[in-house]
Image 1: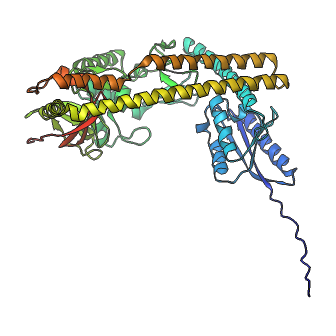
Image 2: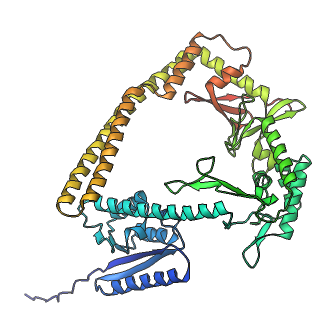
Image 3: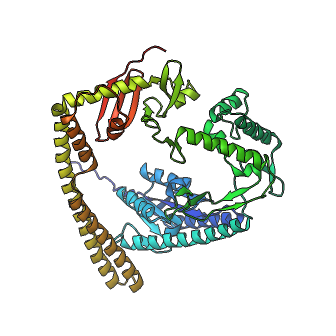
Length: 515
């Protein structure tokens, strides 16, 4: 018998692939040096561990930490984690990683789902060995509060400069540029285009026609693209062209989202702020013409849709491009045409539809419902009621589960307080927050109990009652259409869909007639 000895092979130890994330908030030289110091720190730290290997140092600078989706470095780190290139992540602090609580917890949970812990150096927290994510939640809330405090200070400073008229615009409108000293001055080439736009508007030309004319003359926009009606409109209503400057047209809410200012926060206007391109008289005359157009067409300002001057106004949607249809007077009568097609036939090929054809299709659709309500509406109504009952029960069950989770969090809080992880102030603050959430959950449960039927059920019941008692329609009724139809979708020139308020969308053929 021969016995052959097989030498033992040393076990190959797989090194931990460690990545680091750094961020500074501004792009000045001091912060760039800080970023470089952070990178060197983490590279050195990783080299100190024999069982670690560097999986990359990811960084962002000059970007706010309140939103994760706009930080390219962080997104690159997440991509590396998702593709299995990273086992462990190092970062300086929670506030450097994210100052938005929901973002921070979402990122931590996602990386843990890939078995990738994060180590927060400042707070000495390792998410891979945490007893509970509650500590992270509390500290992240504190980081968000700090960010909100900084934001308030910045807003106060900006507001003071707005009140004094010394605020400097970061982005100048078309027609203006900056001189060597950073002052706002007139651009000689672009300003001539601005004057042309106001002259054309005073002569009665619409914004879309002006845009078409500028494109035809090959006048470039500032970014080199094509002109649009909305771009022209933006120039015509901008007070900066007569030398004034309005501040705080927009504002940022507590969730760091930007909105148009409709009086929610203070606004300021500085007259004679800079050199004007057009006179105040010309600007005011254009505003009168724009307002006259708004009044004539029943347009609701800032809502992007038409008021119900006509029953179809603002509710006919193009199935090809998603644009709204506009009312037109043609030799053969009233028609509705896609606004995109009117402006650019290459962008949308949808042709117009006659007003009378839409009305006829509506009458046909309603007569079908009246004739076959027992075959169509009754089964639909029964199905909605059954689904609503199931959803209500499921909703209450979900809310009860949330209440139980809050109860578990209270127990976690007590354990963390006993073990010394939380001081009295943090414990009481978090406990109050959990209790407030529980109260909100109980209020939602009461609302579900009182809610009864949902909107679709009520609308279906109303339509069913009408269909059961109505005679066949012989003429179109504006009131009847408005009562039961939410919108119209134009699939093709010969097929449209009526989206009813009860949730149904019913298709009908339309007669195109002759052009």
